Image 1 (cartoon, one colour):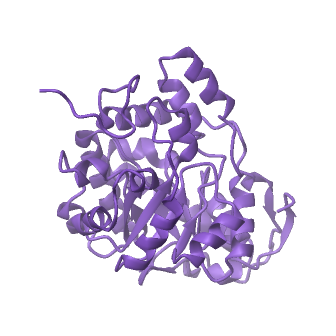
Image 2: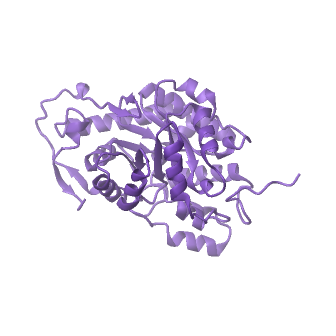
Image 3: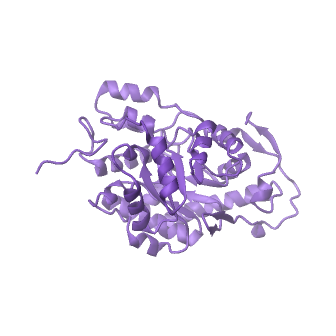
Length: 359
């Protein structure tokens, strides 16, 4: 039987199909280590807190809780989107859901495209909500697919199949531009995002995948109805570098690597988006490796910190490994609060800095 060409799976695409490509992505990011292959700094390391030598607090009683889409997180953390081929994705998604439920943090799932099209669920079905009944779960749809016929029906399928509390639209124009057979006609997608924001019964989040969202675009998206912006800035996984690693064509590989350090650094994106959208939920992601990075992101204006690549190895192993990883992140965030004299996240947002790296 002749295989139907999938959008973004044109001549020269590797892995044989979308599932193969997604699994390739995981292998490449894992091989790159916690930096995810990126060459540009997130800017978070330049943010230095003023140390409080006498905090007058109990470390154990610091309140890290945060409101997130109608639910209460025990810590302001979002496990950002991860994916893989269907069998591998099912294992990863189960590990992430169980750990997120145990820790009381939010979970954003990886690509649901294969599941939406009914070819394999990858664990993205009602079983995910059974594993994580109380936490916020965010569904996923690619902006590029909105230019290929996806609309409200497909978006609702993504939401309903996992009982999601919100839907993330992923923006990845650079990745598509340097990928063999990528989807590069993005005309009209902004209006389609606005239509989804108006029509869906759940909040809409817009997220870049690693090159950042500018203040001006964030403002336009919020004006169109987006409930939250995930800046996903440069400094974490470089998807141009990932696609360069996958490319068989030497010219395409060279072109992709030209853009390996492209994008708005995460720290800059958080500051700018917060200034442009003072009343909007901002998710800070892109190169957050530790709980201290989460604290830095929150101090710059994020409400929640997102992490993916730094926890991917744990996600590929077991629920216990994921839980241990994020428990460490929570403890690091708690210590950052303690050593800035911050009893809660509101206080952390006002913690004195001695060097904000120009942010």
